[in-house]
View (cartoon, rainbow, N blue to C red):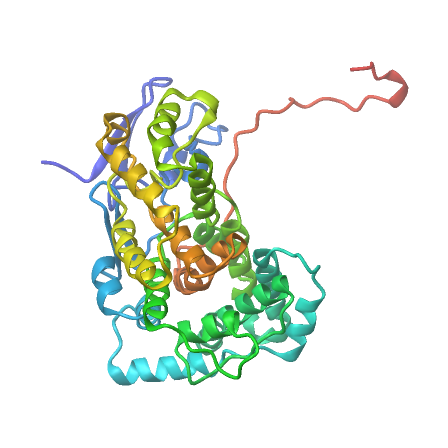
Length: 433
């Protein structure tokens, strides 16, 4: 009769152990019973970058990378991108169910009326150099919010948690817009509570010399869809950072700051900027075949940016949606001259056995940078545009971690490879290296 267990024979000792299997996993603590001697620490797993280690149980986001599936709380990303709004998706991620009309109205009202930041926040941001990177300004300012809301440290209090989460979702676009205006040397624009979440952000970024700013509905909807696509993505680098830092029971502003720091890296939030650099390096559609050839040969360390993903081994479902959004945006803004290059690069790569066998398909970053650039954003703002929507995912994952009774302060093990114990050597006795 089959059992949900794993039988392990330790060939060092000849002993056999039976380890329970749950949800396709074994608890690695169960390996501790496997010892060579009584004073042995016990067997551990070694998994650099956590490629095959689950650090939590989560009911928020489901990904099947082989089949190209991404679902929020069970809802396919394609359906949410087509039919929903970002704040509706935010409610879903936080609460587990889609809101009723009244619940959504209340949530939108709550977020809308927390968009303002304390005037001292502006003074704080003014202290950065004139050319400070917006992502650096964003992370530092979000960290500073914990000093404005000291009650945020009461992470076990549900009411406190929820008001901090609301503040984070509401204020992130404001701080992001201020960080952009700081870089451009422009005065800060206050939020307009008559506008939608996305339109308000665009107005704070774009408005110059007028009392109002009319946001094109196609661009507003496009950014809303991009926000939906980036709202959460399971246990990625930044989300894991939020959970790890949050496990110390620190306030959510500090935990989310860790996520922003992780997202700042070029392998995470800066990937779409790398795609633009690659396309500009290629320069012309006629040079695409030679570029593909150089990638395959490894000459000059050429890399095909925007293709492949740690999780997806088929077409990234977000990339399919974003390609359609790109067409809608370019109908309004005019085609980005790099688009023709991108389309040809995708066409050739998807027909080439070299890339197909390696399951290298376009990911969400391949077209997102082209869209952001067409909408007038500088490359420095790309990771910031990622951080705004991902805030709700970070908050949902942080709160789930806080409520998980199995979670403790994160403390991975290590394999020590340094010197064995040795005695101190006096200065005059040390030989030159």
